[in-house]
Length: 104
Image 1 (cartoon, rainbow, N blue to C red):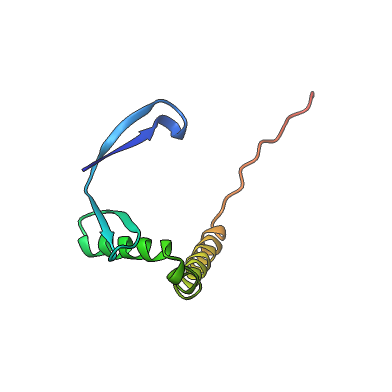
Image 2 (cartoon, rainbow, N blue to C red; image 1 turned 90 degrees about the vertical axis):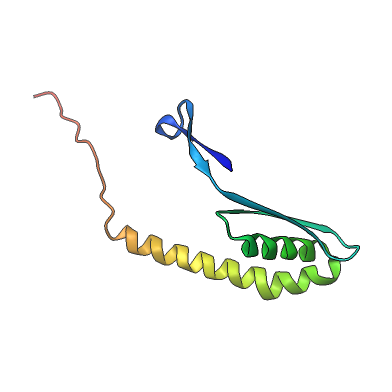
């Protein structure tokens, strides 16, 4: 379990929002580096895969290949999805402004 904290108004005093389930996994591939991952929820397989990739990315023999074939394409897809969502939301954006009244 993990305690989630929030702040009043986003910047004010902290408060305990609630608890969330978290899965943690640590994997050592042979005598190589130790991969560690945390995943929100109870999906053990997701945490295990993240830990395996963490260990592989620490290994110089696999780092560049994984970076170019896995990480960069996923980062590009995530960026494109974020840009598309921002474009869709921007059409409903409302600009608020205040008119200053002069002396009458």
